[in-house]
Structures are given as C-alpha cells and as structure tokens.
Image 1 (cartoon, rainbow, N blue to C red):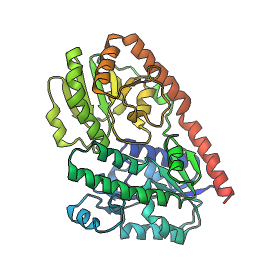
Image 2: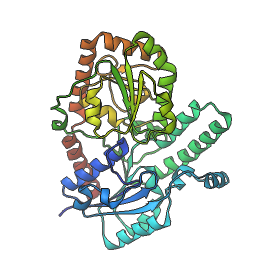
Image 3: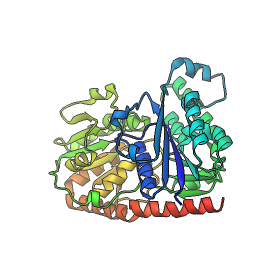
Image 4: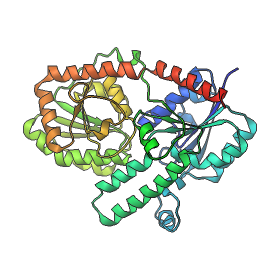
Length: 403
C-alpha cells in the first residue's frame, strides 16, 4: 500500500531558478518516484506568482496540486502595526484565511501518513492541521531563519534599521524555536542545522535531507570556457546575496582588477534589483536571470560566493562542485558542507584574502582545476540523489511505523 503525503510550500516551487525552488521541487519529484500519493498545497505569492499555464508536467502527474494567491509583500502599514504586537512579522505575512480553508478542504477529503511543511513560514497552519489529521508532522528546515536575520542586523550600518532588524530577528527566533518543538520530526538541509538547533533547546527528532544531484546530468558537457572570468550565481531577491555581492563589488573588486586588469566579473541571478545595474562597467557584467544555469556556469571560470550572512546549504555550490568548478567562498558561504580549504574549496574572509586567492587561481590554473576536481569527487560521494532519497524513505517508513 502506498504512503500518502501532503506537502505545504510557502511559494510555488517553480521555475527552478533558485535554491529554494530546486529543493522543494526535487522533494516532490522524488516522493512521486518513490510511489507516494503526493498532494501539494502552495501559497502562490505575488513575488513569485506562477499561472497554471506555466506549471511543469510534474504538477499534473502527482495526485493533486492546489494553490491560493497570497500577497506576502512587506507593507509599511502592516509592518508598523506589527510593532505593537509580539508576533513575528516575517511569519505573519504567510498567514491567510483562504489558504487555511484550502488545507481544511484537503484534509476533509483525504487522509495522510505524512504532512511536510516546507520551512518555518508554513508552520502557522500546524495547529489547524492537527485538528483535522493524525498524520506525522514534519518540517523541512531550509535555514535557521532567525540566524540569518541576526547576521543581517549585525551588518546593517543604519541605527534605526539595525534596531528594527534585530527586533524582527528576535521575534522570529522565539517563534521558530518554540514551533519546531511541536513537530514529530525535522528534515534538515545540511548537517550543520541539527547540532545548532539542539543547542537552542530544539529536541525534535531529525533526519538530514540535503539537496541531491543526479550524476549523469553533470558528466557530459562540451562548452568553451572564458578563462578570464569569475562569476556569482544566485537569487538576487535574497538579502544575503545582495549584501555579499555589494561587499564584493565595493571592497574586493578594486583590489582584484589591480592584479588582474583583463578579468571580467559576471553577476547573474533572478530578480536582480535595479540598483545593481549601476555596477556595470568595462570589467563587470550584470547579467540578471539566465536560461540555463549549468551552461552559464560552464562558460565561466571561477565561482565566487562572498556571503557575510545566511545559513543552510547553498545548492548552487553543490551544483558548481558537480561541474568541477573552482570555488572561492567566505566561511559563511559553505556552512553545512565539510569542505577543506585548498583541498576542495578556497576560503577567504577578508577583501585582501579574496583578491589574493582569485589572483592565485588565475596564475595557477592547474592547481586550481585540481581543487575543482576534488570538489566534484566530494559532491559525487556525498550528494547522490538516489542514495539520499533511499535513506529518507527508510527513515519515514520507520517514523510512520513507530507512530
């Protein structure tokens, strides 16, 4: 008898242009391939709105896929009123009566073995769902969300904005830690989140569910590489990416072009803020969204990841590793992946270190390529999709059986 699962997502997980969509889509796809009866309920946000005409075939192949359009945009009026409550404004933006009604309708029509909440932002519906279902409730922890906001607060220079972000971070922390203890299990995106959550008194049983890669997809490619190039690829509506790229352009790039005046830096990713196009110059190309992320990565030489804040697993890093790319990252950028400096990755935490490592990689291409090959071997060993989901199926079967 097949297992039945309801997956609740805080946005429609398509198109596959960012890490969050990739992770959620892959999970839906693998449950379907493991012969689960898969039902998906998605908040269709204005920011990432998608019409039915643009849905992928997978959404037709699973048992059901339903959405409710919700405006999660930050609004000054609601943000101001939230100051007089104790609720997390980050989470409250995802609370919607019509979406709650959709969930109740689904639960009245179907029974489930598992209900999977994608991120803490879908957790406001946990108590309602528990009234209508005895399924095992699991939460996919994509990030420790409050940690990201605390890091953003530390980087903020404006006094008022800094205080406001700290308030958001603290309220989100209180909500996040309390709520995660009400699930039956957590699926962490990397091995880093588990121990950190335990230190924060979250003692819900956990299973590590990283993003997986299909080996075959990355083993055949014939694309000419632009040697004098480095690139950043990531969702540019995510604040840590905006912060990191700005830091790189303003603090690091002037040091780089003194050493490598012929080098070109490519900035790519969906939802590029208009302000970033001011960085365009003879040595900087602001590309925006790319149609084929794999082809784009293969065309460029060195990947840089200058993150100063953020948590969780960088899926773009895993994909770049699979391609054998030389990657230069801050320590923050590779949290959750046990990579070693100068073996599978190059780590730089200051502008001077970053500039020196870019210069070294270009002057020592053979050694830099070997670091990329080591990264590829690491990724093939630790992030094989089939193995990851085989282990997940065993874990969930035990969770249901012992329930």
